[in-house]
Image (cartoon, rainbow, N blue to C red):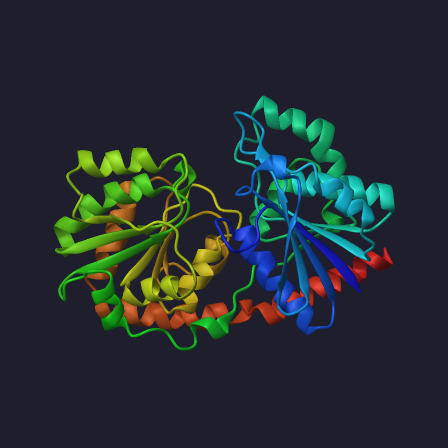
Length: 384
């Protein structure tokens, strides 16, 4: 079986969960003897170059990076040179990732032209779904794209429900969550060494938050909650690790206004060993997002054995049993967030027990098990 994977971003670098998903899925497909080629967009190379960069991953997977540019005043990257490359390819399955992305839109068109079955993975529902732009997109592109897909994979029950609400046929949707490479978390770095690495004093608690610096990630509420929690906990620091997006300056300005420059650390993009070290150093992980299609960070934190405080969005409400393997808080509720953070940090035994329960919860999300479900979806799509 030959599968084409299309995704806006593929590591390195890595700023989105979709790229992480495809990277790990591709590794598992190769183990099963499946022929995989990845097409992704390259925002680093000048668009005028017009040539795709090629790399070999996992010993045999060819990755094409297509020069792309953003349509003015949008976050919609376009790589026109992708079309002729896809027209030359022959495959059994086209697997596109994400909705309202150029790569998925083009995959749908190629699927119709070449009569190649399309599997579409939905990693989330558009935040601007009520805007005129999205309504026009759905009417002229999105609706047909969703109809073209032979099978649709949704990463959570919440995302499934959101797309069913706009008329997507529920019979073609299969809910398969994101996975995690549990082996990466089997031998965590030494916590004391990592705490020194991040400049923490012995008596200081560390709250870790990871994600793009954008409004939807909810870091503004976490920073405000820190002010309340600090009064009850004592010495505490917040490490926000994530790539710069449009909201970064506002977050830094908020920290400055509150006089929290010594309490909040903006670390920048983080990954690989560095991310494991950040988990090791942290006492708790907070996910204050206003929206998540799934939220891979939740799986990573649980695999690292860290207690998590997360908002009621994405897969958090499906995975977290409040008070047993984590805490759930209301979206944008600063006081609720502060209360849960302070309570955890003041109860070491509870943090330890929640961390242990977290590890048990995440065992079902090993990428080997997730990939098996996706391969079955490919086979079902070919049969239909």
